[in-house]
Image (tube, rainbow over all chains, first blue to last red; front, side):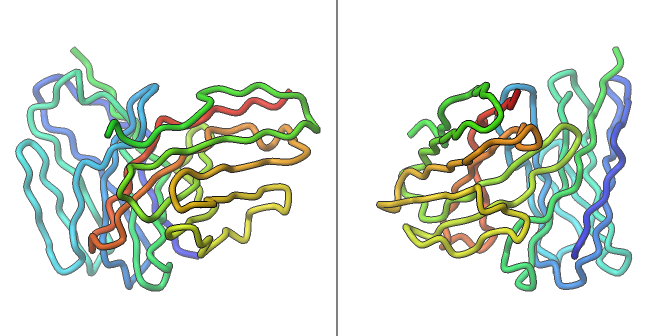
Length: 112
Length: 115
């Protein structure tokens, strides 16, 4: 089956940029997503990108998609303590009947 | 509307007992999903409904699991004869099928512990 992989942890200093990476195997992905999960709270969609785009920017968030390498990244500029969370990459495609295929999540740790 | 709600938030049960969870989606959403999440993993798809029709079930879903959405609004997930391996967070999400990017809105989850 299709797979999505992410590093489990990322540690950055407050004020620096965070870059969370994700790779996927589904060559027919249509949408790719970044979700955020904070303790005790539900998963929250941060942003998404359509597969025919290579970049999307939304305030402090920049998503880069390299479709050839099946690589997705999320850059958070000026990382704040409130950004501490687990970030999940997910993808969907017609082949998967538009089910979301999820990575295991990257825990973002902010150092003061 | 306050979003997707799930009840109970926590459930502790003994092995062999049946449990039932409830999910109330966002009112105008016609799709409803159930996922299971264990520590250090992403959500694992269990099943989804469009209105009251259950359109897909994961092949990983044991016969002990059943879900319903009788009137196309709230949904219930029942686990019969629970096993310790069923201990997990059970997540519900809803979405509006008309949106091309199919944003799923998640509830806070029900944490099940099987002793």
